[in-house]
Structure formats: structure tokens, C-alpha cells
Image (cartoon, rainbow, N blue to C red; front, side, top):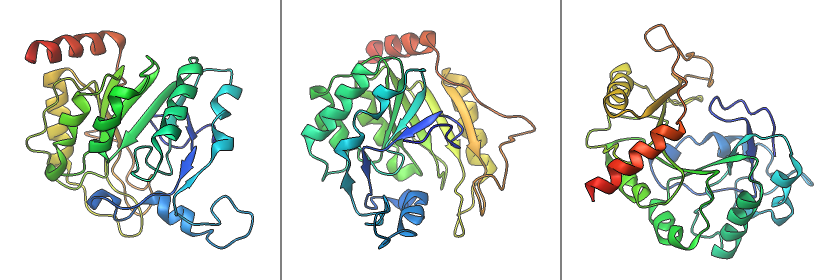
Length: 250
């Protein structure tokens, strides 16, 4: 568990699972894999196994030890809905989040189908936010699966943004994070793609957060979009309004 996270939209990270496998183009240059593989084979290191999937039951109670409220990104080094994570372990993670009600937990997945499969059986406490990554137009359907989840906040991470997101339906979505890719092999992020998302969020009253332009390092391109930063977070009134609109659309 890491406090004071460098990720702009959260405060801390909690990794009851580490390691993952690639499922779509956004995974190609995974920062978590690059970091973990640096330590493969080093005895006693938490990433001795590199980026191979590993459950950490001894980390489950970590959020309960933090009394000061934090916003916590769950599994920044994995995907909680990975197909090889037992449903029973996922449920334990959700039970801890429910008990640690002083915190806000943010979960992000690219495995939208397993999310939709398990969501009805999980305890969705009001402090749990659920998001999906959508990196190009091939995956805008992930938002359709997310809309079926009874999370207090539903959000989209368009990072790394690899193309325009034509066809993305923002109904029932509370928050959108956009950003370019970082790393030695980073792919270009077109400003027109970001501006389009900003405009669509404004039209549909979705909170818009611009994380980074990306580059060789995550901070290389800065965070300014048309000479200002965008740091909006979802508010309770936004969430209630989007729920009403989503229900009305059914």
C-alpha cells in the first residue's frame, strides 16, 4: 500500500493482487509490467515473480489500518476482475472496502464482461467507485457493461487514449479521465481527441479530468489543455442526476 500516490486523481494505492496479462492495445506498454519486471528473480522482493499474477491475502486488511480518510486506487498493479482471481477473493476485497467506510475506493478494469458477471453478487458500498478503461473506439462498448453496475460512481479512464472515441455513450457515467501514454515507446495522443471528450463531457454534465499529455515520462508533456488544468471530480448531485437519466432511458 502506497500513500501519497503520484497518480493525480487518487491519494493512495492498495494492491491485494499484483500481476496481470494483456487484453487490449492499451496494455501494450503497461507501466506496471515494466516496473515489476525490473525486479524479477530478486529473492525476497515483492516483485520477485515479476508481473506474474499473485494474490496477497496478508494485504487485505491494510485499508483498515489507515484511519485518516483517503481516496484509494485498488490494484494499480493488476486488474481486480482478472479471470484467474477467485471470486471468493474478489468478494473479500469488497468486504474490506465496505468495512473501511472512511475511505473512497476506485477500481478500474479492462475485463468488462467478468465485471458484469460478478457485479450482481458483490456488495457495492457507497464508497466504492467503478471504472473501465476505454483506449480507442473498438472498446467503447465497455461503457455499456459499466452502466449495468450498481456503483456509487461510474467512471471511464480514456488513458492511454489511442484514438478518437466515436460512439462512446456517456449516459449514466459520472466521471471521465483522459490522458496520453507515457514511456519509452509511448504512442501519440492527438489534442483533437482530448478536446472532443472535454466538449462531450461538458454537454452531458460529466466531470472531466485531464491527467497528462504523456511522453517519455508521465510528467514530460505536462497537464495543461488550452492553457489550463482540468481536475473535476464527481459530486453527489452529479451522481444522483445521472442515475435519474439512466433510469429514464430504460
